[in-house]
Length: 363
Ligand code: BG6
Image (tube, rainbow, N blue to C red; front, side, top):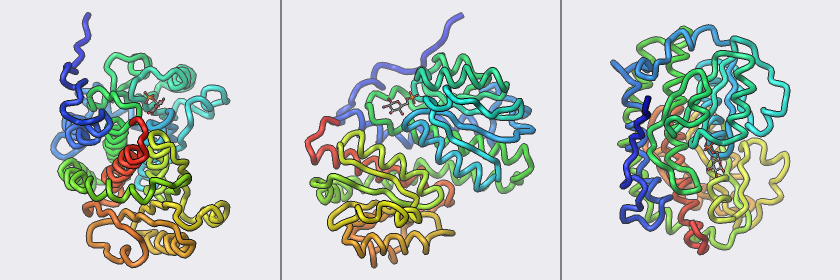
């Protein structure tokens, strides 16, 4: 037996970019295309080449997503999608907590493990524990033949290529993209989604790599914006629904590489605790892509603006009303609201990257 590793040496070189992180940010459209294309047939999710039968997705009572760090935050977006679009009960567990707790799982529970490396020990031990309760374990892993991939019942490999930067970027987007495919399959198998709805959803997903390119072209403006963050000691990321799920990853990225303390808050929760920390000059990144809660989010934006925060809003193209309240607006192309995190994550990664550079941190 042999295992073919389909990565080459050039994938592990900087290729003219100053840092691996920015190279990997730019690689995201390709990484998404490579991850989703083999799993789509006639505009529907297709896992036959991964040897995952449809029966695996049948009769699921609940889903638990277990992971660490950025991979866990990808699970947060997965949860918001699966729960809100498909009505499936989903919880996201930190692997280092899950493995020492009493799992509440049955043989109808699906447990999804997310890991770029496939070797993170807490995630692996959590998998070994879950394997004692259910045969429905699935891993979303980037490294072929890694331990988590081998020990889970099924594996969906992401095709991001080697991720060298410590701050994860492209691995996150392909993990999130994988959740859309899984969600669609679950929706179809459970009858919660019609074929027509699934096709439209998948076709919109296929558009994402092209649309992301236009977000990346805004890098110079985003770099300018980070000058407003250079002296910050605290920053906040707020949003509702899928925006809140994404804001956790945005805050982590900033903390990890710029060493500015950052917190993600569900926009409606800010007033119940730490609004007092929003003082003059504190950067607040407001994610406003979820239209069903848009007015609520904008009212939270006004609350932080009233406290003289520096507000950077991220919204859909054409939503010029954000400019009335925010200091700066970064636009992403209009898309299905569930797909917005795949695009809104780009400005968050770029903000973190340039904020770190501006502060002289070693990216
Ligand atoms: C952390 C990394 O140590 O591990 C994060 O800094 C990563 O970027 C986390 O998300 C989990 O790693 P993995 O390989 O299980 O996805």
